[in-house]
Each structure stands twice: as C-alpha cells, then as structure tokens.
Amino acid sequence: MWSLRGAQGPVAVLSRLLMTILAAQTVRATITVDVNDVNSIKSAAATIASDMMTYYSGNQSGQIPGKIPGTWWEGGAMFMTLIQYWHWTGDDTYNDVTTQGMLWQAGEHDDYMPSNWSNYLGNDDQVFWGLAAMTAAELKFPDAPNQPSWLALAQGVFNTQQARWDTTNCNGGLRWQIWPYQAGYTTKNAISNGGFFQLAARLARYTNNQTYADWAKKTWEWSATTPLLNTSLWYIADTTSIAAQCHDHGDFQWTYNYGAYLMGAVYMYNMTKDSKWKDGIDGLLKSSFQTFFPNDTNIMCEVSCETIKTCDRNQVCFKAFLSTWLAFTTVLAPYTTGEIKPKLQASMKGAAQQCSGGSDGQHCGLQWYSSTWDGVNGLEVQMSALGIFSANLVFFDTSNSSNPVTADTGGTSKSDPSAGLSEPAVNVPPGVQTPITTGDRAGAGILTVIFVTGWLGMMSWMLRGG
Ligand SMILES: *[C@@H]1O[C@H](CO)[C@@H](O)[C@H](O)[C@H]1NC(C)=O
Ligand SMILES: *[C@@H]1O[C@H](CO)[C@@H](O)[C@H](O)[C@H]1NC(C)=O
Ligand SMILES: *[C@@H]1O[C@H](CO)[C@@H](O)[C@H](O)[C@H]1NC(C)=O
Ligand SMILES: *[C@@H]1O[C@H](CO)[C@@H](O)[C@H](O)[C@H]1NC(C)=O
Ligand SMILES: *[C@@H]1O[C@H](CO)[C@@H](O)[C@H](O)[C@H]1NC(C)=O
Ligand SMILES: *[C@@H]1O[C@H](CO)[C@@H](O)[C@H](O)[C@H]1NC(C)=O
Ligand SMILES: *[C@@H]1O[C@H](CO)[C@@H](O)[C@H](O)[C@H]1NC(C)=O
Image 1: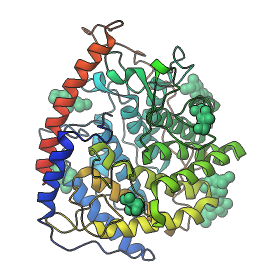
Image 2 (image 1 turned 45 degrees about the vertical axis):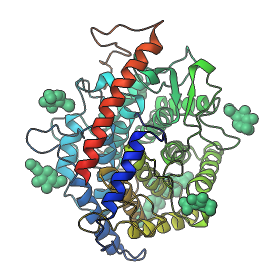
Image 3 (image 1 turned 30 degrees about the horizontal axis):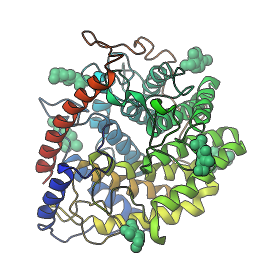
Image 4 (image 1 turned 135 degrees about the vertical axis):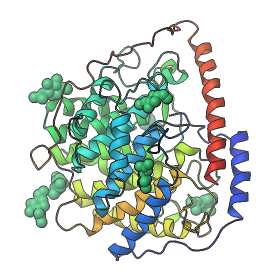
C-alpha cells in the first residue's frame, strides 16, 4: 500500500483545511459505553459498523464488489473487521456483503491477485485479503457453496507469496511491491514480511502442516537479521532497502507492523509453547505499549501521524488491526490478559468520546485521547473504531467461542494446498518491459502516476466523506 508516510505535502495541508471546515459542523451526541456492560459495547459497535458501511457502495448495482474507490487493500481489511464484528456480536447484517466482496476479489487463481488490480499490488496489499480469509476460516464464517473455501484462499495467498521469497537480495525476505516496474520493488518492509509470517503461523496452527510452521520460523528469523525486527530492542523498522543490503532502516512506527509480528508469534507460541515465541510476545508487547500507548493514558495512538494530523487514509485504519490482534492475543496466550485488558478498555472509552462527529454526532474521529472530535471522518476511521469496540467483546466470552478453530477443533473450511499455484510467480504482465538498468526512472514515472491518481482519489473521497 502506498502511503505518504507522514509527509507534509499539499494533500496534508488541504486535508487539515477540510477537516477544520467539517469539524465546525459538529453536532454533539457521542457514543456512550460502559466497559462492564456487554450490551452497551455491542450497541456502540453496531452504530459504528453501520456508519462505516455508509462509505461502502461495492454491493450496489454498477459497482465492483469488494473494491473501495482509490484503494484495493482496504477492502480486505474492512471485511476482516466485519467478520470479527460478526463473530463477537452475532450480528450478521454484513455477512452477505462480506461474502460477496471476498469472493469477487479472490481473482482468477484463488489467491487475491485479481487481474484488474494485480499489476499494481504490493505483497502487503495481498496479504490483508489472505488474513481476512484466514480469519473467516478460523472463526467459522460460513463458506459459500461451490466456491473456494476461505482456508483455500488463505493458502492461495501463502503459495504465491512463498514463491516470491527473494534469496538473491539480503538472503531472503519479501519485497514490498511485487513487480519490477514498481518503485517499492527495491524495498523490503515490515508489513509484507510480518503479514506473511502471521499468515504462515496461522495456517500452521489450523492445518497442523509443518511446512507452514517452517516458513513462519524462517520469515521471523530472516526478519531478525534486518532492522525490520530487532529482537534485542524489540523495535520494528518500517522499511529497509536492497541497495543497502537491508542494513538501513525507515523508522516510522506503525501499530500494524507490531501487531502483525506479535500475532504471528502468539500463534507459534500457542502451538509450540516454545519460550522463543514467548520472548517475542513479551518483547513486542512491551515495545508496543511503550510506543503506541503514550503518556500513561493506556489509550492507543498512531504516534507517527495522529497528534500532528498527517495520517493518510491507509494509516487511519491501522489501529483496527492492533486492537483486534491484541484481543486474540489474550485468547491464544491467556497469560497476557492482565496487561492487555486495561489498554483495550481505556482505548475504547477514549474512542467513544471521540465518536461525536458527522451529521449524526456519532461519526468517529482518530484521536481517541481527546474528547473533542478531531474532524477526521470516513470509512477508515470507522474501521479503527469498530476494531477497538469489537476487541473489547473478547472479555465477555466465557465459553471458548472466541477461540480461533483449527481443522481438529471444529474448523470446516476445506484445505487446498495447491490453491494459487497456477499463478505465475513473478509474471510481468504482457506488454510491460522489465526495466533492469532503467528501473529507477521507470519506477519514478509509475510512482508519479500513482501519486496523482491517488491524490485525486483521496480528494474526491474526502469531499464525499463530508
Ligand atoms: C448493500 O449492503 C448494505 C449493508 O451494508 C445493505 O443495507 C444494502 O441493502 C445492500 N444493497 C444492495 C443493493 O444489496
Ligand atoms: C474488473 O473490472 C470490470 C470492469 O470494470 C468489472 O466489471 C469487474 O467487476 C472487475 N473485477 C474485479 C475483481 O474487480
Ligand atoms: C538492533 O539494535 C541494536 C542497538 O541499536 C544494534 O546494535 C543491532 O545491530 C540491531 N540489530 C539489527 C539486526 O539491526
Ligand atoms: C504525550 O505528551 C507529549 C509531551 O507532553 C505530547 O507532545 C504528545 O502529544 C502527547 N501524546 C498524546 C497522544 O497525548
Ligand atoms: C492456546 O489457546 C487456547 C485457546 O484456544 C488456550 O486455552 C491455551 O491456553 C493456549 N495455549 C497456551 C500455551 O497458552
Ligand atoms: C476451553 O478450552 C480449553 C482448551 O483449549 C478446555 O480445556 C476448556 O474445557 C474449554 N472450556 C469450555 C467452557 O469449553
Ligand atoms: C503442506 O503444505 C505444503 C505447502 O503448501 C504442501 O505442499 C503439502 O502438500 C501440504 N501437506 C498436506 C498433507 O496437506
């Protein structure tokens, strides 16, 4: 996913202007929630989900199911959040829309590489759909008849990504972008590798197939040879470059990077009880708490951009993932509950006071630590809020129903280890030359196109969001 990484460009400036105008129209209503009252949380989550879906039109006639204008990866992220919402609330209002979008975008090879969009995807974009499919399998979201199973779709993503493992640079790892003509092709980043690690770990636990566990371990260990996963500081750098043999580091700190590696370590620990994984959990929890719950408030903050209001649309939804992955951490590594619970509760209380914007006075903002709506609105910020409200429902589960299932404990999604294998590994699309010597120039050209269309897309998204 392309993001401006906190840049102070014209988009950020215009965004702030728009937000100020929108903030002036605030109607006070706020969402009220009591951390001890499950019904108040469910009802708040329902309001937030409903507001989130007002920004989604993929199921309307003439629209493309699962595709959100100006972004592809966020569709997978949104459906993942909706599956978790259904799981914890029992509200199936969005199940049909979810099934439709998740299957529509699965692509010709059952691996979330649909030909409409596959020429411009990063490994991180694709893996979010894979994680959504994995979530569906583990939470027993109903498989559709005569369609690839959720588990098979997750396996399809795994298979295509595993084939892209790049040993010719930095002795391993996934690149950020998939295609040589994309500028991010020469970068290896935390969310692509952390996402693949997590997917492999979850497939290992679900299927009990050692191949997935081996890949999870290998990805973790390779990451730890680079600044993407510093296991002495438990510090996760966002990016590292092939040009510097993966010794350099882009240091923006993002909640989802920590969440991606944390959740994978939790699955590996649950499966193996190996202290190596427990060290990973403890280390990443400690650094996540220090970094993303600043000032002793216990309230989650996207620190690289939130307080200075420079988050782009990608970054605005990241808190959804750390929220729900922390919730599943308490399920699969129950010893962590004591330290995680106060953080999830305080963050939800914070989010509730921040959800006082928009025309109904219940649209959410991003700054959960502030009681004044910050003027951020849209699908992404609703997604983050939905994540933190859903996550808190984990504490009301008394019957193990929050446990992600496996093939041996009630999972019914059918395995297809060959899903996605018909996808050529790094197939340069027809008519496109692979730039070898002119790579940077070609990459920069594409980047400009993406930036300009992305900018236009973002502006129209923001205007419609108002
Ligand atoms: C699209 O999904 C929404 C739920 O998000 C539902 O209310 C609406 O009726 C659906 N529209 C169509 C055309 O199916
Ligand atoms: C691909 O694009 C066509 C034409 O816009 C559209 O009808 C179709 O639904 C799209 N498919 C996907 C998977 O996005
Ligand atoms: C981790 O951080 C320490 C302290 O800054 C540094 O010495 C070490 O080289 C780092 N490890 C990796 C793999 O980058
Ligand atoms: C935490 O405190 C510092 C110093 O007062 C401040 O700059 C920062 O914005 C605060 N962060 C949050 C999330 O409140
Ligand atoms: C693994 O997860 C289950 C819940 O599915 C939990 O009961 C069990 O204690 C976990 N194992 C470990 C080692 O924490
Ligand atoms: C929950 O799962 C654990 C093992 O994961 C089992 O020992 C326990 O009996 C289950 N509890 C209930 C209420 O089903
Ligand atoms: C285990 O996974 C690997 C990798 O996808 C696959 O080649 C193998 O067939 C799987 N084994 C079983 C028994 O499903």
